Image 1 (cartoon, rainbow, N blue to C red):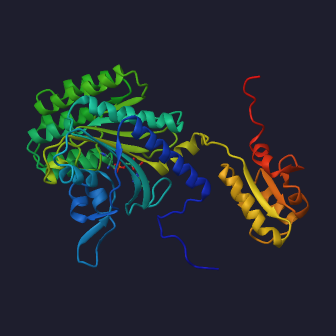
Image 2 (image 1 turned 120 degrees about the vertical axis):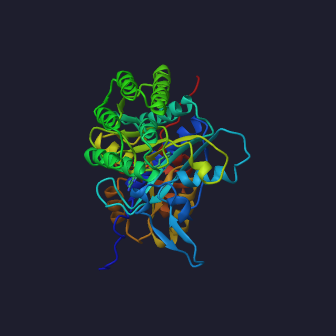
Image 3 (image 1 turned 180 degrees about the vertical axis):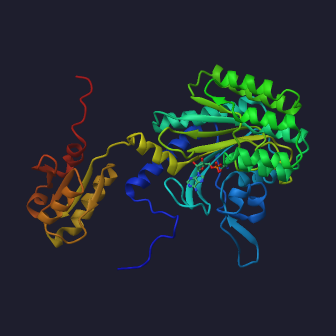
Length: 436
Ligand code: HAM
């Protein structure tokens, strides 16, 4: 037996799982189309500098980074956002705004493998760039909701926060960028005591500590009430007050759109990635404590990459995690059921005929496998039964002389001689009689 196995954190998708992954991918592509997002395909390998710029420690330290043979420091992408921002800062620089861009593909992070967490994983990623208006943020929420509905998830909730509220406080308290990011990392991990301690050590005022303490306790699904309380709590912090107003405006638009999305507002919510400046989002289902999607507004990244100042908002959905969520909620794959057929020649001399008939069926859009193991009919049928094939087409000399084959319904265990010209019709079911 071989000792080779897949590398830790990497996984193989067997046909059923691959089918589920592609089903979800197809749904994300459909949503992209319905909301007007054009698909772009960007490289898996990017410059380390680009990917590391605002990734935040969590992601930065987990990158698959290496020098290529030309001595360039590169990495496997841990997310799509920097690649899309790079494009907007360069190739799309002079194109009219907004940009609605969609990507789907694999990403790489040296995370600790566990349920729903891999080192190679897939995302569908949506970026809306060029608008700083709340309707852009509302669109990201709505399309996420549409995707969850499209894959058939029954129960899910969107956790919402606003980094601008926290940043506003830290700015006014003159906390430097590094300290701000460190505090946000701690808050992301819900290590609120350590976060507060750090703010204290950085010399923040008593009012600041009290405000943060109150914010951390503000959460729940009465989002408008909570947003209002957030506004009262941050009084005196000008940027934070504006951020709460922005949050309110987004919540109001989502509510007016009548898109039935279950939202939970959490004032102390932070995310690991450092580029966020506004609303932040994560999707959860009750059965899992890991997020199945996450995103938010980031208004400074494109500028940081040397592009025109371009406000942006986006989200990425974890495809494996959506698959896991579907399994947890027993959501069946809505795939088109197609009849499948196995073609078996009765003797070696009829192999060519069998291939010809198989092709004829495929041309008529019937899925066909041909017996390639050289097995006798009984063995071949046994195998077809085991694999739940619907029909066997047995190609024999006697039937061929009459331009016919033996068609066996493997479920009903019945067989009949059928003219080749009628074979497709029989397999697909009798055609509907239209009119009289
Ligand atoms: P993120 O929260 O790092 O955000 O990742 C988004 C989603 O990718 C997660 O919610 C999760 O479903 C999935 N994911 C992340 N890491 C793993 C992993 N190790 N295994 C399986 N799934 C994983 C971003 O990537 C941002 N670029 C999203 C964004 C787009 N923000 C603005 N635009």
